[in-house]
Amino acid sequence: MRRSEVLAEESVVCLQKALNHLREIWELIGIPEDQRLQRTEVVKKHIKGLLDMMIAEEESLKERLLKSINFCRKELDILCRELSLESFEEKEESTILQLEKDLRTQVEVMLKKKKERMQELKVLQERDQDLCEILCTKPYSIDSASVPSLEELDQFRQHLQALAETKANRREEFINTKKQIILCMEELDHTPDTSFERDVVCEDEDAFCLSLENIAALQTLLRQLEMRKAQNEAVCEGLRSRIRELWDRLQIPPEDREAVATFMTGSKAKIRKALQSEVDQLEELKIQNMKKVVEAIRVELALYWEKCFYSQEQRQAFAPYFDEDYSETLLQLHDSELVELKHYYEAHKELFEGVQKWEDSWKLFLEFERKASDPSRFTNRGGNLLKEEKQRAKLQKTLPKLEEELKARIELWEQEHSKAFVVNGQKFMEYVREQWEMHRLEKEKAKQERQLKKTQQTETEMLYGSTPRTPSKRRVLGPNTPGKVRKPSKTPSRLGQRTAPLGRQGHDKENIELSGSILTGGCPYSAPLQHNFTVNSVASTYSEFAKDPSLFDCSSVGSQRELSKASRSDFPSRILNSTNIQS
Image 1: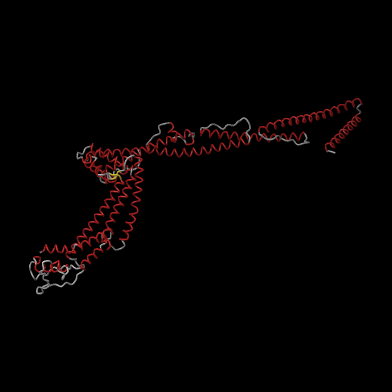
Image 2 (image 1 turned 90 degrees about the vertical axis):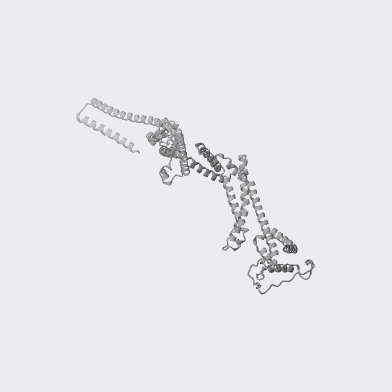
């Protein structure tokens, strides 16, 4: 039995006891029956009224609970739809009170979730509004009247994160660009004169609108300032270059140059103004020293003519170079020619440097060729000869490669410019071929000169005898000892005699003439000149000829052999001719 049922029975017992007690009191008092009946009826009404009131209250409670249940069910359905959640499942066999409590609790939970989402949505919208104001973009599209789902809130947060990153990037770009703009303005001595420039430079960084249009305008402003700065720098650099050029032409002393050394760097307005003032002063001084300046330009022109390999005709084509009437017009003509020549050199600097490299290599090659034909090089010590031979061999390999490389580059240049690349008044490859041909002719000329010299030396030695290389003991004829002289034969034809060889007859003739001819002054006591004209002397001459390293050319050796044979075959006739002349 439930406790409530026990209490109900106890209540009934108490009520019975109370009624019995009332009857006893009424008995003792002596209250008549009809009054007892009335009093009992009053007690009944009181008890029934109390119970009816209690029942009504409980019925009212029941009704409120049922209404609450219905209300909570409706609220739960709405909240589940708003929060995109599944419907609440009621427990089976639940009492009205428990069901009402569960539903009410669930409604409270749902309302709390709804409130949290709406609060988060509000916070996100506020952040979005701030970012949109800074970035000048449209707010995030979301219904603020409805409850956002978890997915929608997550997308909103991701959108705000992207906006925050965009803001950070644009802010960093803005700060960096602003610093550069301020530096450029300081460099140019520029004061912000537009509202946008003032917003960039003077306003608070956090108040600047980081829109794409403003960022683009910021970059445009920076480019304009940098362009102005670059132009200003170019102007200042041009002024400095002009100052240095005028310094050199006017031969300004170093102490005067130091006075403007502080303005030789930078490009601010005051520096530009100072540089322009210096140029104006130098230009005025230049006019006062016109001849000196023109001559200095001519020196520079000659230098660039050399660099550009101008021929004599090309140099003479600039007639003002030879004009002696020093005027402003003449100076301008020289200035224009020098500027044009410098531009021409800079435009083709690589080609000219390549040609100069070939020119230097060619001169070095010619120097090695000259040394190679010098017999004294064999007396060098310290391995210089070996080094020179290695360098000479290396040049013989690198020169053709350099020529081919320059040929390809020049042909490409000529195709691009539709004109010939000229070196010293002629095409480069023609110039190279001419140099090689001149070198070949020089070698041939030197070779012929050596052959002619050796031929003349050989003829002289065969006619008069060779000069001994080392001292040898000679028998000196004293004044009392006459030399052995063979008397000439009385036979008319000396060629018919077989007793004495032709060579010996030559010696007899020489001894006769040396002992008593006018060459000795007719004095019998003078020492006769001795010519050891023998086969040995001729052989020694050829040995000396073979030792000469300059004659190691195969073609020259063959020529010398033929020449020596001809000299030997012609020897008797030349002896006879000389004898007849002396006779």
